[in-house]
Amino acid sequence: VSNGHVTGATPVGGFVMVDIPGAPPLRAKLLAVNHDKDIALLQLPRHPSRSWNALKIAQTAPRVGDETIAIGYPLGLEQTVTRGIVSANGRHLNLYVAHIQTDASINPGNSGGPLFNEKGEILGINTMIVTRNGGSVGLGFAIIGPDLARSVAQFAATGDIATGRLGVIINLSDPLKPEGGLLIEHVRPGSGAATAGLQRGDLIVRIGEQRLLAAADESARDMAGALAKTIPGQKVKVSVLRGEQVATVDVVIDAKA
Image (cartoon, rainbow, N blue to C red; front, side, top):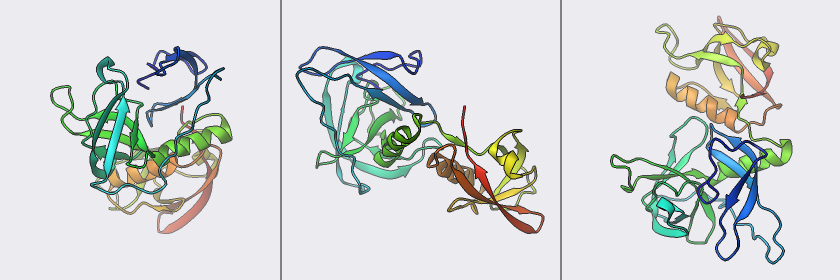
């Protein structure tokens, strides 16, 4: 989070300083962090002379070409506003969240700032750039609003935003593996997968509503995306091909450490 200067050294439950224009710096409590998703949740204190207005997260996906406005703290320059368009949707720069690509100028220090649409709704949270020189070259990325909203809802329900874990290690390189599905190499003892009876050699072909019939890398991304939408402690139906039979079991999703 750029304006609050959250770093990996700040423990959950600790405090960071947040600069608000027109107000003294505030101590915000770090409620939760998910490094897989690059999301942190902060709690601002009550202010005796002002109230905090919640911004709305856009409910509809942006279209390529829609206008965007990025706000942040690039290179220490507070409350900088830049403008651009949505360059692409559905970029997966990690396994757990999707990103909007924008050419609105984003630089180091913009991370944690909002990416708005023309209505003032939050499209996403600015998170990274791709660059060869360290500065903006028009390749900026924001975590999509629905992934942020899902983390907030998870925190409200559980008090945490941990990523779900199935409890298996996948073999992506076995040359004898069928084209579709994910081959289980190892089942972690004590995990939800172990309790449900999943075994080494099982081929996962479905998790929840997500079918895993593509190549290994794409199927791994699809499974991670399905787990990222699941709150630890929930049960998810997992279908595996074992020999020539398909078995479907209920797996309690663990919290990824």
